[in-house]
Image (cartoon, rainbow, N blue to C red; front, side, top):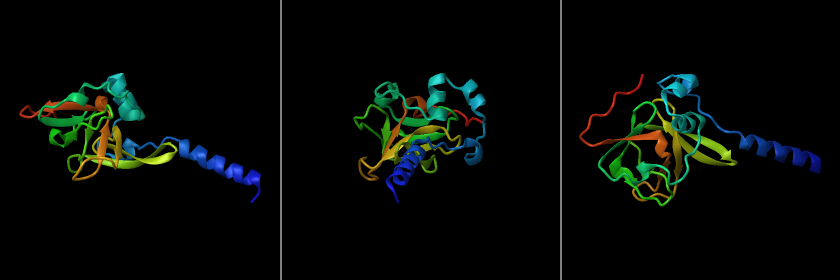
Length: 165
């Protein structure tokens, strides 16, 4: 292999790795709404994170400091995602959890930063929540690093809102 072929192949790999990995909610998740429908239903900041896989600025979410007992739910469809007992202070500036509720999230591989990361989504609507890292506390060793704008909080004892259909 000559130098030109090697450079071409490496450049191609880098270009492909930089492409954003998107999960198609229409093909993968039970709640099937178009991007236009979600855009009408959600505040702009939430839409960008949930359905364009954006990231909110660290430290910008009031949910990062939420300490009450309750449930964190998807801001798009209201599916319960995390129990507050599984939240911890990670020092990252984003709400972090060591475990989601059973069946609440689905994962995919994200290559936006060239190297692969595990991205997770609400398993009901496909809304992007954040990324999973292997630097969390026991018993799982996982850190589910969530965008606060992709969540809503329901205090324990209050009724959870109905799932969006």
